[in-house]
Length: 302
Image 1 (cartoon, rainbow, N blue to C red):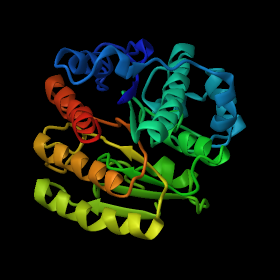
Image 2 (image 1 turned 30 degrees about the vertical axis):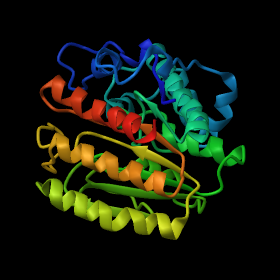
Image 3 (image 1 turned 135 degrees about the vertical axis):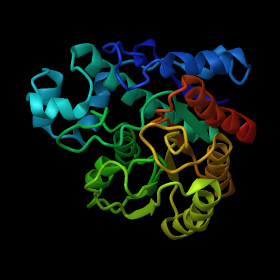
Image 4 (image 1 turned 90 degrees about the horizontal axis):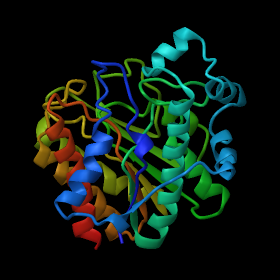
């Protein structure tokens, strides 16, 4: 069964006119239910469990977490996060993180599991930025390693923006291989060094994008031999995206997802999927592109 983390807290109120499309977290599960891709039993509601704190603290520094939890981050650094900080927002981040941890367990059981939110790859060990505060997939990786549920992990980050925080977190960790395929001239303008970075030129389009992915990902899997994969399936690679510049179509984005799942199935590697970014002007485009990831997983696995 396809298991999907979702909690009503995912849709967090933001000031009028904020550029982050928070409503997608409410609309996406509704769309999946409406069209019959999913049934209510596909969804599980993560909560905050104190035992996840040790995994959070294995990724983020105590000083940063103290300031985050106490809403005492200095204004300059708080502005880099991009959301008005509040205790409810921090609770939301922790629930999203536990959604990814629980999805790891479901992925081990069913082959794939997903989180309606997450993909917070701009969160560093000691600070957050660009709508990211706790790095959910990095924390999920630590959960798997510390509990000996995985020995070698591959993070496949296909958001349009480089996974700079994830790269920094695992820069000295041989058990986690970070692969980021992203816009060369897009945020972050100062890139970190992933284990493998694949920067793409503006307006590369579907065929160039998919050709690069198909010539790279299988080689990584053959070389790294992961026994667990995290997939960050950002839909900000679309031509309609306000913050992305790669020029891909909704169909091309779907073909990307199909290829990643195909590789996971071929090698019998469990995969946890977090959504990442999507900033097209029309919310319908965002929902359709994200929904394709779930439709594809449901079709290919179940």
